[in-house]
Image (cartoon, rainbow, N blue to C red; front, side, top):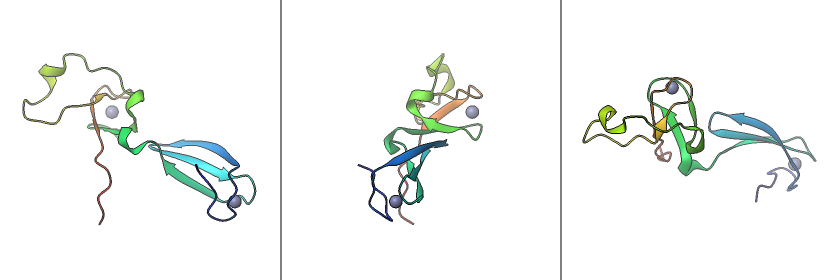
Length: 94
Ligand SMILES: [Zn+2]
Ligand SMILES: [Zn+2]
């Protein structure tokens, strides 16, 4: 459960999403933070700047005609431009 680093309150206002981050503000002290939305589901477009979650993606039409046989399997289609989008590797240390 999310709790404020400053005052420990668990009363947060959701301020909206920024790409793959969800932005919250503490109702007690005003401290704000952005936390990653379900990191395992973060995906990014191969072609444009779009990032989001797996649930935002469209199904890939003609999947096997569009990917390299040995290449990574796309998670879906970018809702912005229709290019293939791929799951993001968890951030490596360093
Ligand atoms: Zn607080
Ligand atoms: Zn795109």
